[in-house]
Image (tube, rainbow, N blue to C red; front, side, top):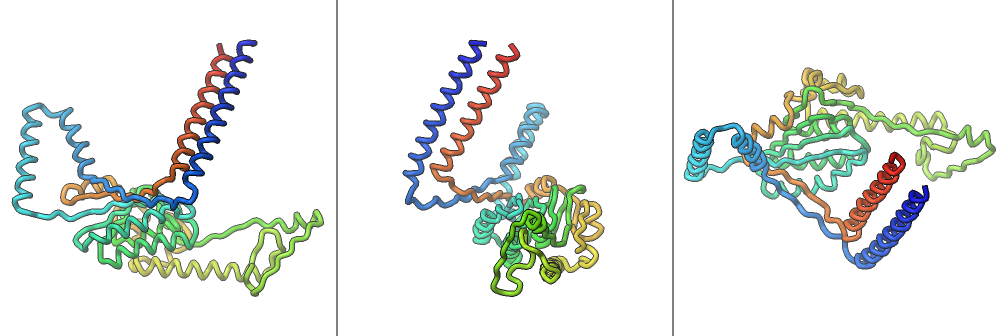
Length: 340
């Protein structure tokens, strides 16, 4: 027991020293970064054809006999030489990814990716968006959808692939695609608007707590968390929801006129197989299947705009990981001592 106490004391002192060093270094990094403009991001481009080629070649090396492998490589070289001699230019496919949270935070990178590709993309090319989102804030997803609309306005074909979910604001983005491809069990739809908030006015009143809400403008505040809500305020709030829903429906109907919009804009969601029958999607296919097929005839480029992190942010992340590992190691060793 005495050994355990000494060991625990040593670890606590060591942890204190580590924390102190981290605090000093973070403060130093903050001083260095003070007054500096935050670094710009960087566009990262990955050629997906090389990725698919590497997968295929690795499998061929493991399965084919040496003479078979030699023949395959010889045929590939012949085809490449013929393409170069003919001077044929393959179409380009620009692949984007959008993993949406409630605030559609990924739009900050999406807007730069779209700006970049539109400097080169032509109507003979294609943009493929791999979209995953259950929706979120109206204004945030409205901006994200507007960014995709730039692609359509430029006359560049847009294909949206949904492997898991594109609902509510996510479907608002998906509907802009000239083609929507969905996995059979992906979740789509939820063309509706929802808002909710708690009200603790009766609780405050029970404890003799008054809440004053002062506004200038009849409908500056319709429903509140702390104040007493009125029927007039509820009616106005509902009216605003209905207006937003109508705008949502009009937006979807504009890009997918084949929909029976009043039938699908009920807030319901459907799995891919059912969504196909309702024309919410155009084809049941995963993004992997579609991109692997396109790689045979086109040049695929994955674009990702990465925000550069400041020295303080990078060091803070590294310090956090190191501290987590230290605490985890200390805890596991202490538990091992107990079991021994």
